[in-house]
Length: 135
Image 1 (tube, rainbow, N blue to C red):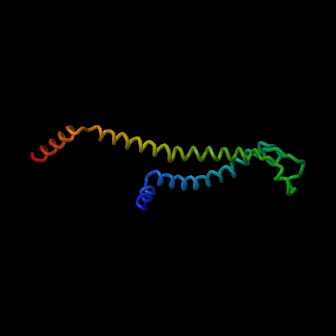
Image 2 (cartoon, rainbow, N blue to C red):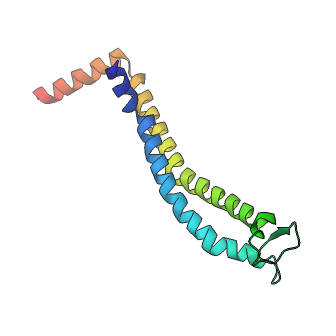
Image 3 (cartoon, one colour):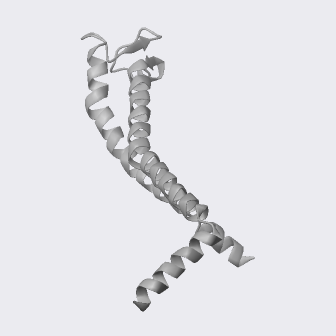
């Protein structure tokens, strides 16, 4: 029972998934900092000088009112989160998914070539190697 669990944990897919989760989490922190520090202020600036950001205030309150944030629909934060998601997905696809897919395809082609050799082909190769070795 433990051997089966060990085999499952050591499969390439589980290890790849663990690496992807760790790298994705680390990269998400970088992208989140970028979008909150650079992208979100740019989006908020599009809302105009009299507004706090790109959004809609549901109730007529001043920005220094403690309940101001609870009645403000912040569209800029939603756009920032969408940009954040797209950036993380883009980088993870081109850094992890695409190279791993190419490697798996390459291994599959190499495996197909090895499987394509028939028994007669292998015997001919062995004969040729033995002949070359004996001369």
